[in-house]
Amino acid sequence: MLISWSRSEVSYETASDSERERRHRKTTVSAALIRLSQAKAVADCDVDAPNLHLVVEQDTPPEVYDFMGGEKAQVDADQCVGCGRCEQHCRFNAIRVQDGTALVNEFACEGCGVCVSVCQAGAVALTSDLAGKRELYAKENVFSTATLKMGRGNSGKLVTEVKLAMLKAAPPCELAIVDGSPGIGCPVIASVSGMDLVLVVAEPSGSGVSDLKRLIQTAETFQARLAVCVNKYDVSPHHTEEIEAFCAAQGIPFVGKIPYDPLAVKAVNAGMTVADIDCLAGQAVREIYAAVPSLLGVDKNR
Image (cartoon, rainbow, N blue to C red; front, side):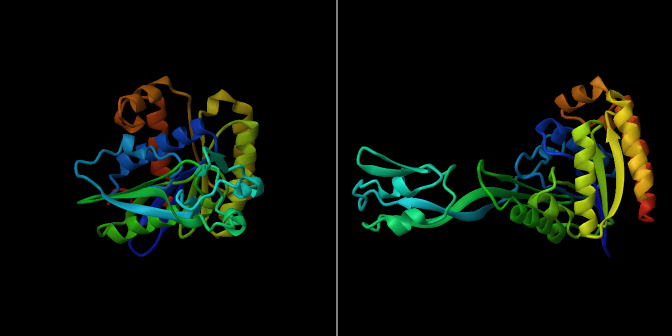
């Protein structure tokens, strides 16, 4: 989770590793913190697989904006002579000649432009690609989100647009919560930038420990303040102890441990957060929520 402090808001963002199931766990924590804090400004920056909208319900239609990514090859069927030169030279196997006309696989095309260069008929051109959609719900509260189409790049750029849209539309408030991108790549860098505190939701496993260390190294590059909690800590007490020891050695605040709780899954399936029901995971998140604002000197009761 990332917490950002600026003149007008504090932003929380959760980050974990890149496996799908762990992304759902990260969002479970984010959604509970949103509910507990009653945040008026929220963003889902996990644009490759956004799911915060499942528990952050909106009663008004969103403003929808196109997100234009890189370029993709497009073939003019009227000019194509079916010579196959584009197919022969494409390193990504993104173009095939079928029934005398070249066809482009939009998911495989990298927009390198080789096909344009080798086409003697001038039938291929690079055109802007509609890579996704960005949505903004702006009423009393603000919710910014986006969905990147499968196989598209530039997700870091889209994450930045999602964050900026939230900040521009947000009402005067002290707290904003951002469900961040998983992993350590470009989307995470875009999520971390401008944040004042990163709360990492770590997983108690060998890969989880490795991802935690890499994510912390990434966040420190941006001089972001850090805090750590562990999700489903009782699945592997050994790795949880390793994470706690690492945080102590690095001087990183360790703010809590969330136990494995079957009720958490039932809450999510019902469109609720773990903060909405009486369960062990919900109590643990409440304790984390109580600990985090003090790291920034913020009064969570205001």
